[in-house]
Length: 337
Image (tube, rainbow, N blue to C red; front, side, top):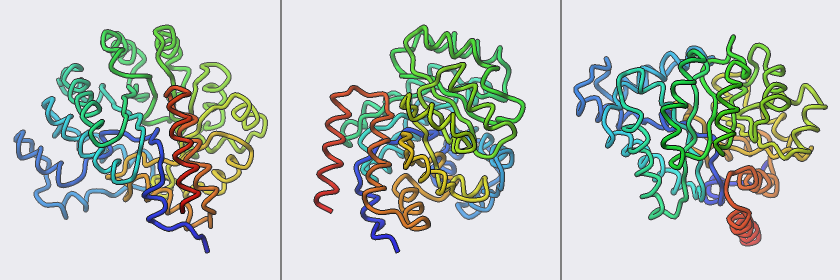
């Protein structure tokens, strides 16, 4: 049995590189914002909200996920959403967070891009008081059109000093990464970092991972553990220090298991894989819970858990000086625990 305790994983210094801010909308806040904004959501109690959280694959999850966002209307709503997450992150000793947001899910409802990003940005600034440095990653919704992504990037570029990179998420079926090749290139030309989802066990997962690595040139792949099916791509990812962000609790809902065997194989082969929370309000746990669940099920050692946390800093988009500071924190944490 693992020596790793829940306290050990909660207090472990770590970076969160894969969390969707819309996926941190807890039932209490959802009901509060629905009432404030006079939005009818068909639920009146926390129990009713929790009862609606039923899904067993990516498509059924998204069918629940997107309608919940209708309660987010004003700048202060986005601020409150982000601050609620950042307080939870602080309780999990997240030292650095790179937070996904989906502007198209809001602009398609008539919410201004500026409303979304200004509210979220205010929270990342105020999070400094929680001892967290945080930044934003703007994601394209891959099940919307290429033109929608183009328009979104054009709208976002005047704000490019307010987010650090772009990502790609939502339903992957029939929406390969190359659909958004031009948007990725434009983002890179403007000095933005790039990452993208390659969700577990999807149709053409391995082909999509190859596109991301060999054609688009992403710096990270979110999820992406199907890469173990191709040793050549694993070697490529290790050699080029490509980060992979795995989310055990959401994997357990959407796929057949946590993908822990794949995580450990990739860790052993030198791939910069790390652990994150994805949509914690929907999958039953924040980042410390994800570390703990993985450690318990796959009998991880403290050294393996710390190695995963080190990868989270090494794959992050912060300076080498910041990385060195956080890695030293991790070494001290392991020595004392």
